[in-house]
Length: 260
Image 1 (cartoon, rainbow, N blue to C red):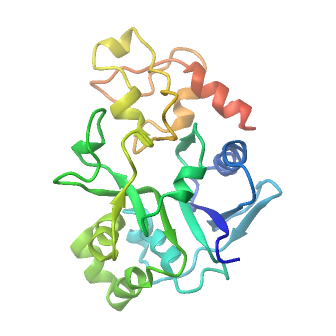
Image 2: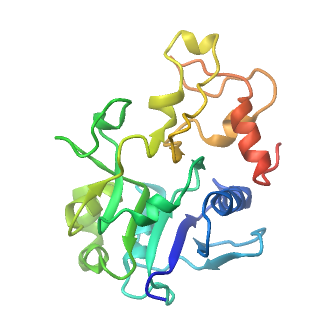
């Protein structure tokens, strides 16, 4: 199908258990009307829910260091033939919370759309302004249309790693046409919802605004850290975020996630 909608995610190693994939799958089902396929590229599909399509992560020449640093295996989605998948792909990192309609993410007309992780990603910022930096936590593209990103990496993986360090820098340098999600579509937990230092000792994180489509949890804390019962601290100094966060618990459990 030329216009099939494909949601892609990736899981390798032990950092993210199957619950992360299952919760993301259920959340996408709840926020996307109509037909779509949910595909996880992984080294271990144990525990996945029915309806999740699992395929191995292709060997594109990543060294062990590239698997540990910079998410270079993500470049495998830019292959000319990704398991026969065709259509529009929306890649979503596992540490992402879905809170709004996903249809606009597929309907956005730009050939390639990603997150602007620069200072423009803060509330009130203008994505794509001077100094924009691509983030690949959530990006959309046409499958098979950006093969040069992978091919140029495979021509000399060591040089690519030395030059770019992390894969999203490489993608920004080699994608044919790049645009960024409009302001507020994908928001940063740290920059939008976490309370300022000092206030976070007394106030819980803000609830996501109704206008947000997704919340990106880049780095620490990760979503499950906000689920721990009791009053344990889940943030890094000087931040003092602590305690179980009610809206995160509700999201996790309503989408089939387990506590503890």
